[in-house]
Amino acid sequence: MKFYRGMQVKHLSYFRANSLFEDFMLEDKNPARTELSKLGEFGLIKHIAEHIKLSNPSSVKGIGDDAAVIKYDDGKQTVVTTDMLLEGVHFDLSYCPLKHLGYKAVSVNVSDIYAMNASPKQVLVSIAMSNRFSLEAIEELYAGMLLACERHGVDLVGGDTNSSRSGLIISITAIGQADKNEIVCRSGAKPTNLLCVSGDLGSAYLGLQILEREKKIFMENPQIQPDMEGNDYLLERQLKPEARKDIIAQLGENGVQPTSMIDISDGLASETLHLCTESNVGCRLYENKIPIDEVAMLRAQEFNLNPTMCALSGGEDYELLFTIDIKDHDKIKKCKDVTVIGHITEKAEGANLVLTGTEMLTPLTAQGWDALLKR
Ligand code: ADP
Ligand code: MG
Image (cartoon, rainbow, N blue to C red; front, side, top):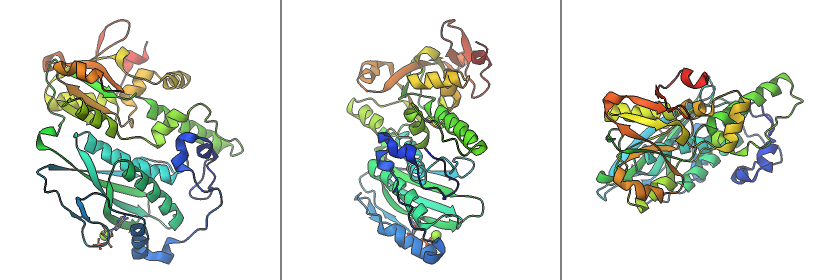
């Protein structure tokens, strides 16, 4: 992978060489640069709209009027969520290609819809950027967004376009639907419920550590090309997270209705505490049950980081954390890529982590992992 400063360098050889990023190959040739000022705001919106087709019956009218028209008349409830991504805060364009950024921006929003046990149907995309970006750059961003939309069966039905003097800003609103009795909130966990998580945790954080390390080396000596060997999975987890549509589908197929659910954007500890607080319960989470990828384990050690800490406090995994009634234990075993990591207790017992080996309990906190670091 070559780092690129702003929009200057177009070669992303690392991604090209990597089949995981097949959908994300960029053109080899140095594409022409079309200034946004040539199109103007309305020209740009028209250009964006030309690439967009609506597929959901509920998307009655998309881009082009004062508002989109959405029609949900099948007795379902509507869920709405919005998230902002700010350059310099949430992403760094020196190592995050725009197509990946677009994909991630949509993924993190639909992840919130899945966390309600609902299906995403529409998104609205608002962007603010400076003239540093060309039309081709914005096309890359939208190509990534539209790829994620396609994968999740979502229509892009509108947005807003502005100029920014402080970097790129992307704000996405996602709309979805679910049956009233299917919607899962953070507040329904009960003592004896099992605490479950999808996928594995901590990899996105380690991917970020690798990117930051290689950026630092590159900045100090631009002759040295970044060494990303063997880190495909971790980088993909950071740059191109997948919202877990498949987990929601499996829960439905196996007749499991979670009692509470949240998606993991800030780390397992923080999200578990949210579930406990909102549900007025405690929990016991087993350190040795937390799913962590093998390569993530190795890289954590290289960075002198505790892998459990990466899972608990790293964040950006976009996996689903949920609780189920204990009677659904056999059903959850049939769901692929789901791990039972603990159980819910009475509130008075507190939210605790059971440390591997010692079986000692340590209170779960969103920061400050003294107990883990000292071992
Ligand atoms: P208004 O002045 O009423 O805000 P706009 O000119 O901003 O109207 O938007 C016109 C149409 O284009 C609307 O349908 C809006 O949702 C859509 N739109 C504007 N910006 C974007 C964007 N960045 N991406 C997608 N749709 C957009
Ligand atoms: Mg507008």
